[in-house]
Structure formats: C-alpha cells, structure tokens
Image 1 (cartoon, rainbow, N blue to C red):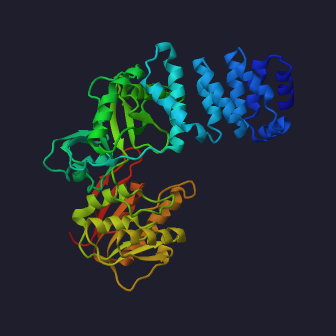
Image 2: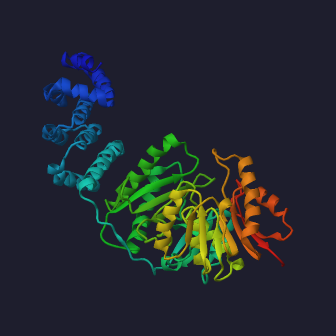
Image 3: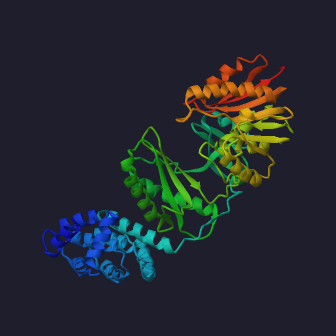
Length: 495
C-alpha cells in the first residue's frame, strides 16, 4: 500500500488523507525501508508539501520526512519550522528533526526555548506552545545535559514523611527522638527533622517532603501546577547547591483512569514550568526529583517531593539480586522487630539465603558470630558473595539443598525468609516444605534457640509449631494485612 498512497499523493488526489495513511504504514520498519527504497533519496514531492496551504498536510509531510532519517533534510525542516506560523504544527517539525543529528541547530533551538519560557501566551495558544516547549526541552537536554544539583540539606530541618510498612510504623517512629511525630496510613510524618538524622534508619522505604498545604483541587490541573511551582522551587533551592533548572517528573496516584493520567500530568507539568519561568523542567529521564500527587477521598491532592539527589547508602551493598530476593528494607524491618530476641555472637543459619540480604541485615542489627547461608540456587549464592563482600560481612555460603545440609555443631538461630507459594510451587508443595523445614531445623538447632521466620503462609508456620512441644511462638508481627505476611519469633527450649 505504500506505493499506492505515495502515487496518489504525487497525483494530488486526497493528499491529506493519503499522507495520514502513508504515515501510519511507516510505523512498520519493513514498510519504512520499502518507502525509502522507493524514493531513492528524491524527496521533492514531500518537501513541496511543507509549503501547502493546509497545515495538516504540512504537519504530516514533515513527520514522514523525519522518518526518512536523512541528514540532507535537516536544513529543510529547520527552515520550515522557523517560518511556520500555525502553532499546532511547530512541534511536529521538531519531532521530525529529533530523529536526526540536529546538533548544528542546537544553539538556535535553545534560544527559541528561552523565548517560549519568557513569552506570555493566550489560553487559546497555551496548549500548542507547551507542546513546542516540551519538544525543545527534550531536544536540548539530549545533547546539553543539565548539571545535577548537589544535595546540601543534610542538616536543614524540614517536615518529612517517611513511608514505612503500614502495619509496623512504630518500628520506625521508635527510632526518632525529640521530634513531633504523626502517624499516617502509610508511614509517619516528622516535624523539623534533618535528612542526616533519618538516613541511618533502615526501616523506611521512602523519604518525602510535604508541600502545598493549601487546597489543591483534582479538577483543576493548571491551578495545581501554578500553585505548587514556587514552593517546589524554594524547597529545591533550599536543600541544594547549583544553579537552576531543576529536572523533575510527576507521579500521580489516585482514582483517575490510566488513559487520562498522561494528559492530566502534562497539564500540571506545563503550568508548573510556566509559573517557574524555566527554573523547573520536566524530564522523562535524568530527573532529580519527583513531584508526587496523592489524591484524597475529598477530591483534593496531597503534594510531596522525593529527591533523587540525596545519597542513599543504607543498602548500597545490595548490588545483586534474583527474582525471589527480599527487599532490603523488609529484611531490615525483620531484624529491627526481632532485635530484642537476638543474641550477640550467635551462630546463625539462613537455610534459604538467596543473595544474603537477611543475614547481612541480621548482622547489622546485632553483631553475629559465625553465619551460614544455604541455597539450592547456584546463581543466588554467587550473587550473595558479591553483596556480602560489599557489606563488609563474613558469611559461609553453601550451594546445597538445605535438607541435605549437615554441620558439625548446632546453631543458636535460624534467620530466614521462608519460601512462598508461587505458580511453580503450589500450596501443597509449600506445606510439605514447611513440615520438612521444621523437622530439619530441630536437628540443627541447640536445645535453646531462636527462629526468626519471615512467612507469607503464616497458617502453615502456626500449624507446624504446634507439633513441637519444645517450641513456642514468642512473638509475631503482622507485616501485610492483605496477604497475611507475618514475622515470627519462635523460641525453642525453656521459657
């Protein structure tokens, strides 16, 4: 069909419709190559259409020329862009140029971007100007990377929201002294604390900075962006060194349909950029901060910032992982909750160690003695060695089935993330594994010992504990209300 559409265009018949149809065909790589071969470098017909009276003809001709990726067309497209007077077409010339090496025109494109940032626009033109500005920003940033800002706010008091395990928020709150704390649904809000005080706490998953205390209506995206711009910029400058612009992205969480989110986010972003006068730039890559908008039930937003410029060193050892690996923050939470029951210099065994995260975090909570990690998956053991070396720990890793493992002396503790039900391992198989695990554990543990078990099938753990007269559940911590994930501290021996 490529040839037929092009022949109709050459004959001047229903040009706009045939350009649109041809452009649609060129999404397929094979058709695009066939069309390039058909043209043989002769672009005169399409180039002439850049001066057609119909702006949609000009738009589609430009986009088709861009797909040809011929550097010879770059001056033609740039000249057409400069002379184009119809607002909604201008961004399409840029889209066409973006598929080529447009660096010879980079300075002129950057100058145009500054003009658009400073220009006042009517409501009628705002959408199209924003589209052109977005394309220019993307093109400029591709070759002129903005220098990343350095976070310098380690000792500057701020309000913060620490996202934590919903069921165990107190584990994080208990590690903070001298600050007013408010419990939230998914974490805690701390007044006047510094990032330096928080960075050493291992049980939070995200550090957020609340902004926008005023009412932000979900129904008014342009007003949301305009209202937040000054606060976003002021907080970013306060906590960083370096000149603007700051690169950001927007994350929207709420009841809005997925197909509507993209357009809504663009409206907020455009208003935010416009109000900040170019000091805030939306970027899909290499962003330094995230503006998170969380929809409340009353139709308003809670707004907060997440900075990716803050050095995150808590779990820097975790360079390697496998699909079944426990998140380091979850392992750290398990170690924190179990801490009162852990013994210094204990001999610790993890029968399903994966990449070593549970043992590393257990050692961070209370210094352990000899630590052994067993796993049947060889790749996990190899990766565990890497992580453990980076963490500065010493663990004896063994690539072996736990149920075949033997040892010359008994252990003080088992500290592990138990296997869970998956598509490959059904409930019956896991139930059998739990039964075998408790039997094997009784052979490897001292008469007075502790098991700390992170379990997604808590009912199976409770069932097995009842079978052993010398075992008792000393403490259990619910970690996930939906699936029942629970951390068990199981003691063996006399009370």
